[in-house]
Image (cartoon, rainbow, N blue to C red; front, side):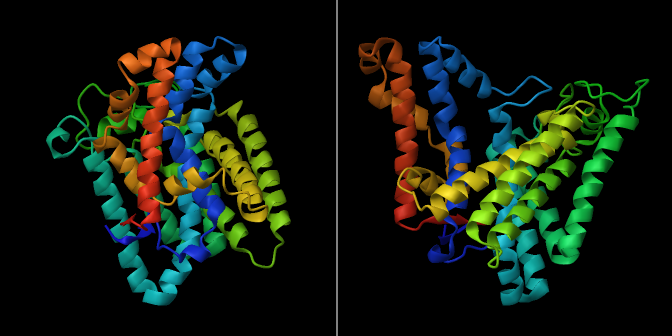
Length: 375
């Protein structure tokens, strides 16, 4: 571990950090480290329509559709794209093109291996594929988007985005899975699931649909490219800050509407990462970024966002720690058993809240001591 942050990119100096991006990344991670359980426990207590709405938003849709929980992963990929913009030019200036390529491939490999180790470890590779997983997909997105960034520049990235979105739509719309009569977007009936089932290495027999499979990683790269565009906008020194917010909100709204309209023909499906899903998730990501940028960096209201900044400045180690540090067990030791029983129906809510406090204290400890995981 080094006193530097780099989940996807070289770490700028603290005064150069755009705090809203750390806050948004931490907000995104917050739902992974326990906030979903917190609202789930709250939903069990309250039977109001509002509680039911939030409960539905925190469970992935079975197949087609979009809820808040379906935004968590693509938002993080979007922020990875922004990180590439914040670091890559400085990296090339400091180490040259050859050094940049070495850094890119090294980061890709370390992220990929960390993901494989977190998901199953060496002992379980006979049952799970190390080629599919959250960090593995982020690694692929970082690799290809970084290479497109340094070689294709802006025009190349625009072309790549369009080719990916349209090409993926054409693949799923016109190419049937072998053994079927027609192309389909249905579960276990489409070309993407067939391809993963056939070619995903080390995949256990009988597993068919994989949410982080091979082919669906291609459109995920498009989500990362959208983050690059947002990063360029944020770093534009000639544009007033309020206009950046306006552009982010407007572009996000347009992307979301276009995505839903495209979804009428090409459904919004997270497990396939359809092109319409890329646009919907990218649109929401841009609007969230605009709001966070307005509040945190322009208005400088940061006290409320401090816990998110703690998490967002160190996302990789927080994510990895969730697999090895049992924060929920720690919460049960402090607030479970007779303590939880004293609070009746609110006992589970208390346990989850205490567990999240432990996560925040861990993140704050690392942040205050400038202990960040570099890959």
